[in-house]
Image (cartoon, rainbow, N blue to C red; front, side, top):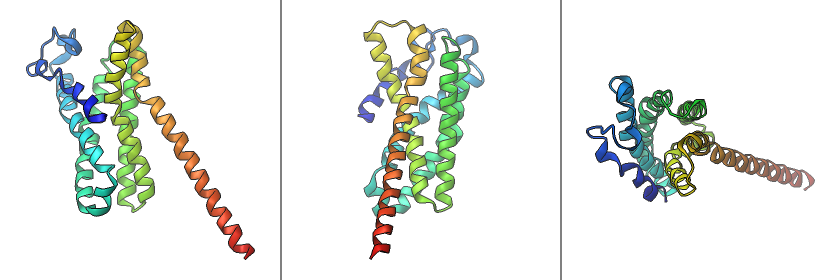
Length: 208
């Protein structure tokens, strides 16, 4: 689903090379496109699809268990692209998001949280804390998948005939925050159940 929906990200690319300022996302951005924003834009659209694919490979249990060296090499590329390209470029682009502070803040917070989650995931791996590493990298990839969910929300907004001023600020938050909240709730419940099971086993052992 991620790959098939992610192909929608690539659909307008012919209009980006060279940039067509009469088309879609680039419309109205010509006055500030050349310079830092332009560098961030091309960095973002080139590396985000790559990171989406790499993230799928990283979450594959078979690759992690059977080819750990490959998992580590792919992980280094994933982390490097997110920390150096995807998240920083997303933050730069967020500052120019249209339709007000709601959209700007939504995309800006997304970029910062994605950078932090990826950095913490990498640090946990280096420190040998693999369970914590896995959770943080799940968070990282969940946030990266906001690029996919954003396209789905755009199609929904079109079907509902919502104006850009209404839909864009909502999508800036809805593309990642609800998913992250659900993940945190599920993770918390699983950890609580694990602690209860360990406590029950400990009590049973002491009774024996």
